[in-house]
Image 1 (cartoon, one colour):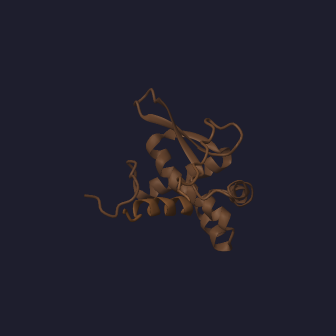
Image 2 (cartoon, one colour):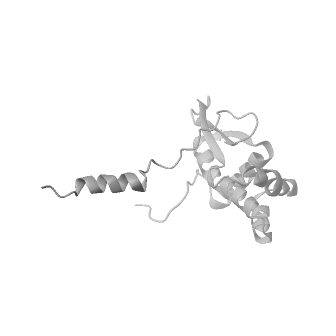
Image 3 (cartoon, helix red, strand yellow):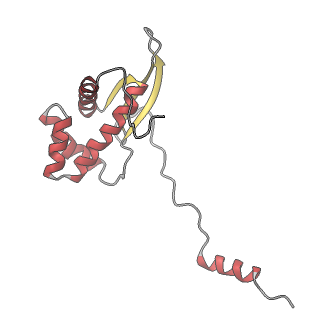
Length: 152
């Protein structure tokens, strides 16, 4: 069993894996949609969402964290400016992974990963579901009263 082991190895050493993910998140911030394998996209989603959360936080420490992940200063500015403003009302789930075709060479499942709520999306976002139906207090009292009424 793999207790307390998070993330995929992706067939690389830890330094190579981190370099790959840093490059991909930098490209995702720059282009807002990239195509990669499904497993890389799912790993990338974790880091990309974290970078947007740092951008929304807006502190110096958060900016330093983001600068440690992203490759260029203009990408850090985009995260703390444009992307932070776009997602200020959203509590998470900033990326979408959409499966595409299988790669011709090795039949690896490919996928697009993109930021949502932008022009040119692959799929329109689903409407947020409202809170589950909860009966009002009056209806609950009337049901309780009718079920516990004394019978003569």
